[in-house]
Image (cartoon, rainbow, N blue to C red):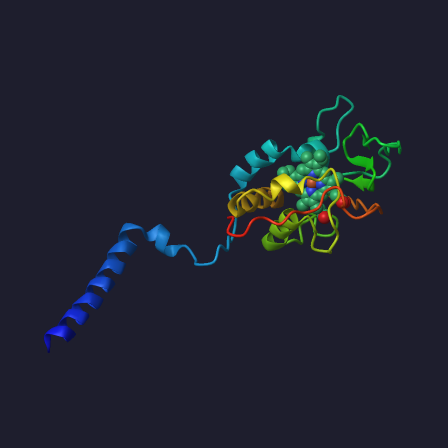
Length: 198
Ligand code: HEC
């Protein structure tokens, strides 16, 4: 074996050895897939983020006391709840915070329980992430105010996966909210996240 070949061979040997050692020392890092695909989130952490994000404020109906009705948690606007009045130059909401009216028209809070037909039980994680980041749902419908995608889309993918995991774990509730017609989301456009953001 000539000297040059020996050196090259040694170099490769060291590289392979380094890779094996690296695997043993940092197995977690080596197991991470190249693409940021997240199979499932941490529902317990998602529960905390949902509290922090105030999702109950608008998505959970309220009791007469004003407290969220946890037996109907995340089920959105229910038929028969009062609708807010249309007043010029003012954004109005009902006492349940499940219906809103403004220059864009009327918005009803969506059912975000895991019911497959009337909630988001049929959504995949990529669809959920795309919806919150683009402000457009899987049916191609722009989310209108006061659903705040401008802030939520700044969350790292892992946080959105945690929120999704939690929402998929709660009680599914059948409640077809229906789509209130109105103008597109001119007031609440989904903003593109800067490239390279998590
Ligand atoms: C200030 C009120 C408000 C808050 C707070 C809020 N939402 Fe919403 N959300 C809405 C309304 C209203 C809609 C329906 C928008 C529409 O139909 O255009 C909606 C729609 C959605 C949708 C789309 C559902 C569908 O079927 O298209 C998802 C998903 C969602 N919200 C998740 C969340 C999560 C998760 C949180 C908490 C981190 C949250 N929302 C907090 C008001 C709110």
